[in-house]
Image (cartoon, rainbow over all chains, first blue to last red; front, side, top):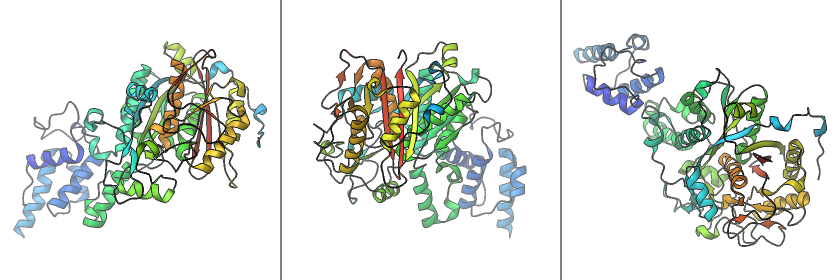
Amino acid sequence: MDRLTLDDLKRILRECAGEDEGIDLDGDVLDLNWFELGYDSLAILQTTGLIERDFDVMLDEEALDDADTPRRYLAMVNELLAARTAA
Amino acid sequence: MNTAVAVADAPAVSRTADPVVTGIGVAAPNGLGTAAWWTAVLRGESGIRPVGRFDASGYPAKLAGEVPGFVDAEHVSSRLLPQTDRVTRLSLAAAKEALDDAGADPAQLPDYAAGVVTANSFGGFDFGQQELQALWSKGGQHVSAYQSFAWFYAVNSGQISIRHGLRGASGVIVSEQAGGLDAMAHARRQLRKGARLVVTGGLDSALCPWGWAAYLAGGGLTERDDPARAYLPFDEDASGHVAGEGGALLVLESAEEARRRGARVYGRLAGHAATFDADGTSRLGAAAELALADAGVRPDEVDVVFADAAGERGADRTEAAAIAALFGPHGVPVTAPKSMTGRLAAGGASLDVAAALLALRDQVVPPTTGTSAPAADCPLDLVTGAARPAGDRPLRTALVLARGHGGFNSAVVVRGADA
């Protein structure tokens, strides 16, 4: 797998951390931060663990801190996956 | 009796200051929810059955008390499902029922005025088993980040606190079966220090192969497979106990707070004491005696005793002797509705307190099932066969006894709202 899509991310978030009442992940969520989406740091840790496992990739902890919205998170992961494919 | 601790030196506490129970939430093998459970208890309906949660056919013990009909998603949000063991889900359900029953809205109280003190013995055992299996079969990458707290004894208190905004002094008590009573005593301490409301009691659930291994290593489980003849407290044919899951949570409030908001009161926590069998000598009787002294209640004022009811001949004789020493042989009605649920570890005594309060409310002593009559060496007026309505003498005061594996003894005295 060389690309993490928004649908992938939403599926994994739901599996790892559920979905807050009043939040619709299928809505316009790309630029909402994790807190606004009802996810705490542990939810993102669990989600990241599963992505690292399924995509066989190690994410950078500092980069993770900055990836605080789905758009930024996807960009960070996909940049890493693209670099790996190119290598 | 063997102990005379200087109870008289304790500061005199006005009896009207006793904390009161205003809400009850239950998850029990013979009923989910207080109403379903209490109806079953009064009818003598048992929840002990062949283990259904996993294949127990290869184990020496094959029966358990499993909470029926619990649909996780009806009680726990999808956010919490991936991070909670069954015991936490049962606890969240019981806490909500108790708070709703009390009509309490902790958000209306000042910050830090409401807390949670629960008892627990196993933590999230089934969750922990799954993560250990993932670790050993697939590697550390497959272990849930939530394992960091989902296994922990205190997790039920924590999740209840988060869900209901109970940010006052909170904690967990670990003293096995005695824990359900010891937690109430600690909740009372917090109320005396100024808290206004504490969710307290306890639940346990460890009905998975790993939990079963722990139960078997702990000893005392019956190996019989007929649910009707398996757990027979005080019976001469007693062969051990059945393990079960569940328990009860209670809303304990300062009398002042309950009065202020005009809450319906089930009864008050009038006394508690705990002792420890340090040298192999049972001090269960001493715990009972000290709890009565703490409550300022004479033995002849006690109307019913909810027994620990080990279901093991030696331990049953010891408890019967302790009760007979305090009340005289056949001197007080004794019952063990846990014969219908199995022993629930930290949940057992909490559930007994709930039963005691409802017995006082409804003026009826629930039955001990299975046991048809106590053994000759257990000189008890054991309520068997069917529930026993109060006669000429109203039920006003109940004593609840509990023994925890390893030497813990605890006793609680509850009195009716008007007693």
